[in-house]
Length: 230
Image (cartoon, rainbow, N blue to C red; front, side, top):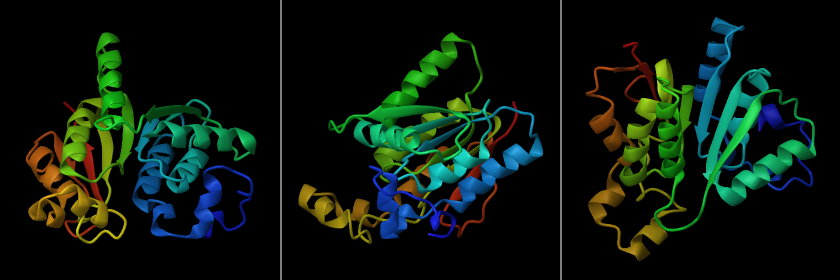
């Protein structure tokens, strides 16, 4: 676990599960590096970041350590998971200084983090703002359906020079031990199971958009994009 080896997660609802050491609990070095660079570039600047797919908090806890009292962190995941996340943050002192905004969605079929993102867009437009987030880590549902819409929404929610990190761009349902069986049972077409759906969404909505610049290499498991100033 590295960073968390000496942390006390006993009795916590969510963070205690990180002890299992599975890949789901591996922090995203790319996103942590993005936030670290934003803070070091201008320590006095207040930033707002978002993590879509908080999971069990491995990345979130490290990001929260980097943010100051005037910064804001938005966490997106299922409602029950975000409730446990907030409960754990309040149960023990993890040195979190920033404002934490939980954005939970239900397990209802068709509901997702995208609904909450759409609400943020309406709020942003009402305030006549041009962007909310300085950096976003998109690690949600890895299907084209959710990732494609998520990217479209985040493109507007990112500030100029904002950074978008896409996780698992080469992931496929067919190679997933946790998802493959359910996908077969649900009747997912073979071509969709074998396709890199996050990468498909990237190619359609980001690679050809002149307003976005790819900062990472093509063979990286995560893609990092910067929104060019208007």
